[in-house]
Image (tube, rainbow, N blue to C red):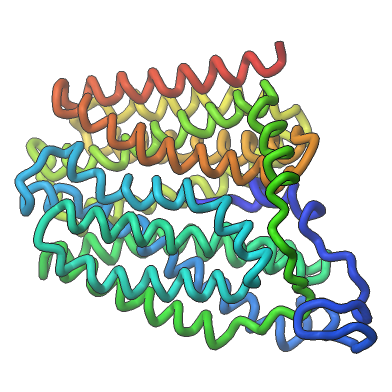
Length: 424
C-alpha cells in the first residue's frame, strides 16, 4: 500500500526544523553557516526530488512485486493460496513493526544513512530471493526485506522537512508519493509480464536488479543533510507519548479503520490473481499484472476526498467512502471481466479516499506527537495488510470468491462501525 500526501501533510509542522542557518546542524558547527534550506528553484532540489523518487520506486517495486506471481509461487512450492500470500504478508508485517524503531534510529544515526542503507540492503536481498529453494527460505528473505524497506518511507518525510523550506515541501513530497504509486504499480506489471516468459524467479530477479540501480542512484543523488542534529534516544519521553497515543479512544478507532480497510484491499488483490488465472477467465500473468493499473483510481480519489473533507468534514466523507469500497467488492462477484475491472476501480477509489481521510484525521486528532500517532496508524496499516491479507486466503480456500468477498465486507463493516463511533 502507498502513502498519500494527505496522510503525511498534517505532520509537517511536527518535524519541520526551525533552526536558523547559523545554528549548529548537520555537518555545521556552532557559529558556522550551513546550507540554507532548499527551495524548488535551487539546483540541489532537483537532486533531492530525483533521489527520493528513485528510492520510492525501489521500495514499493520490491515490496509488491510478488503479488501477481502468487499463483506461480503456490504451484512451485505446492502450497495453498493463503500460504503463498505470505510472500507479501511477511514483508509488510516486518515493515510494520520496524517503522517506529527505524524512525527513532534515524534521530541518532542520521536520515540519509538509514534510508540509503535500507534501500541498498533490500535490493541485495531481492537478488537473493529468486534463489530460494523453499517457501520458508523465501519468507525469511522477505521478512529481512521488510525490515530494510521500513527505513525509507519512515524517514523520508523527516529528511524533507529538515532540508526543504516549507513553501517547497509539497512539491518534493508530491514526487516522493508519485514514486510510491509508480513503484508499486511498475513492480507488479513488470513482474507479471516477465513471469509469463521466464517464471517467477526471473521476474523477481529483474525487479530486484532495477531496484538496486534505483538505490544506487538514490545514494549518488541525495544531498548530505545540512540541518540534521543527532539526538540521543529519549526512552521515557517516547514511552509517555506512546501511551497517550494508544489509549486515545478516537485514535484507536482510526487505527482499526486502517487495519480493516487495507486488509480488505489486499485480500481482493491477492486472491483475485488466483481467480483470474483459473476458469472461466484463464488470464496470463501479464494481463493480471496490468489489472493493477486500477490503483491509479486512487490517485484521483485520495485528492478528491481530501478536498471534500475540508468542505464537508472528515466524518461524513469517511462514512461515504467505506460503502463505496464495499460496492466495489460486490461488483467483482459476477464471472464477467468487465464487472471485475469496474469493481476494482470502484473498490480502489473508495479505499484510497477512506485511507486519505482517516490518515489525515490521525494527525489532526493527536494531542501529543502527531508524527508518532501517524507511525502507529501506518503500523496498523501494514499489520492489516499482512494479517487480514493472509487470513483472506483461508476464506478463499474454503468458499472460493463469494466467501472471500463476504470476508471483505465483514472487514469493511468493522471499519464503518469504528468510523461512525468516533463521533459518539
